[in-house]
Amino acid sequence: MIEASSDSKAKSGKPVIPAGYAVVDIDRHVVDVLAHQPAETLHGRFGERRPAPTQNVGVGDTVQVAIWEASAGGLFSSASISPDSTGQHSAVIPAQLVGSDGSITVPFAGRIPVVGLSTAAIEQQIVKRLKDKAIDPQVIVSIKDNMSSRVTVLGDVSASAQVQLSPRGEKILDVIAAAGGVRTPPYETFVTLMRGERTATMPLQQIISNPRENVYVLPGDTLSLQKIARSFTVFGATGANNLIDFGAQGITLQEALAKAGGLRDSQADPSGVFLMRREPVEIARTLDPSIPMTGHGQINIIYRLNLRSTGSYFLAQQITIKDKDILYVASAPSNDVQKFLSLVQTATSPVIQAKSLSN
Image (cartoon, rainbow, N blue to C red; front, top):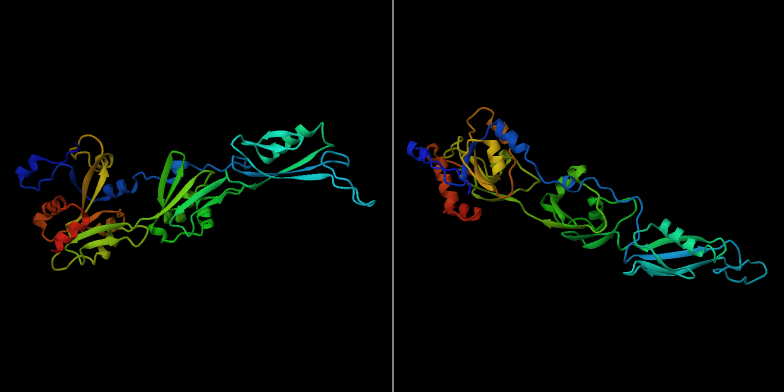
């Protein structure tokens, strides 16, 4: 159980901070801690793993084999049709689907295991089997349909599809483009990369703006694109009490206040701007080790910004708003914290908070 309350505060007349809450004044230290919070990244989760330099054959692929012989009279030669022709010294075996046993059939060579092998390695295997049967055989193996080297793309794309990967290797944005692109704004589109039991999610706009996050996809990966409209709730002495969409990849506390219509000149207390969100206990300890808490998990942090203080506007420019944040501007300095706490405790959701305030 996380605790952040204190009986001594109640006796001293200060606002009582209930269990699970903590108030932190925004200063340079707080801004630096929040700026260096570890975030999940695609590169950090999957690394810069490049695809194999050659594509190997897998179950479900379609393989075609062409065989040449050095002279007429061999296994794969045909008789001449005129005195001026030498006949055919080659044969093309019909394309074969690689079955669950991982093999294909080549006349006079039998069943050839091909799964996990490159086309060059398969050619060598066939030549070895035909060496004592055909006349100096030469073989070319090609993959007609490489089902095992595909990536599944689904969700908010123009057309969900299985995109075939080329030997050069494709990255996330290449595969999304091959699926026809996205149908939603990039700042509202989140990309989830699934590889085996590992998954990671990141905004598409961040992948576009940071090439490091545009990692290579591998055969068998799944990309899921989903529109997630991010928003924050604002109430108190602002121009608008409402649930407000980001409308961009990310906005700062200063921009959030502007979206809310700014502070009401006749009512707002500039020293009482509050931002509440749930933070990991580890972050809370870094912000202020004196916060009384035990255990692990998350705690409700109420960040307080005093716009009367020198440099506060610059600090507001460096605080990034997160999805489902709650922003409150007090109207009376004497009871700003207590009123805010009573509002967030009695309401069950950000939407209800805004509605109850307007009523």
